[in-house]
Amino acid sequence: MSDQYTFDDPRTRFPRISPPVQQQPEPGLQSRMTPKPDLGEESYRGTGRLTGRKALVTGADSGIGAAVAIAFAREGADVTLAYLPEEQEDADHVIGLIEAEGRTAVAVPGDLRDATSCRALVQAAVDGMGGLDAVVNVAGKQVWQPRLEDLDDEQFEATYRTNVFAAFWIIKAALPHLPPGSTIVNTASLEAYQPAPDRIDYASTKGAVNNLSKGIAQQLVERGIRVNVVAPGPTWTALQVSRGVDPETLPDFGASESPMGRAAQPVEQAPAYVFLTSAESSFVVGATLNVNGGMPTP
Image (cartoon, rainbow, N blue to C red):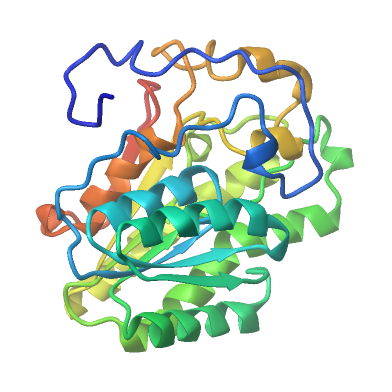
């Protein structure tokens, strides 16, 4: 089995998928997707880059968040996983993989759209791991709407609360616990630069995350805390099958958009988060690392 250090052709490293049309109610379960996303269960190899770190990862039950949680554990970190209660089935899979590495997994189901829940999440992470020195905000809400008139106030607010407000609340609550050397990695998207016309609310939140992160980075670097961003391109996750995109477009997902000719798998996003959390990136502050298969960004 190859790992992330194997030399090969990136175009064929992972298969070009053509998912059948499928839909699940939000938030969707990865375990019921066809095909199932690759989180690196069999392929991600750790090298001790995060030994002793204590990380909080939101959206850690599936998709990119789950791949990050698994990679962090294999790099030597304890992990607190934030996810919705409805996602427990997927979360249990990730928790088992973290514990198999001999690391602590602190499970905290809850709704990040609520400020009180975000603050309780941070406290649970500190209590469960005996501290906190890495915050990774991945959890996101994405629901396609073909016309602006179909985008109601409730969806618009819920998307902002999930994608922007939660990151703000979590970072603010975490600050008293973060020693110098700590890191924060937020998640934007290619859509911060190339907004899809049927995902107006989602795309605009990702632009906000990018800008918010760069402002916070300038403040916190004076405390020895680094803030950076990962901006993924099309990646096969539960977002896509829970009204994230037009279901009729699923068979061609990622293939026509990316110069790579395929969508990414979640495991391909994880190394960017590992790099920005590790001491290897000690002089990287306020940066956005685009992991999008070759789509140009500013």
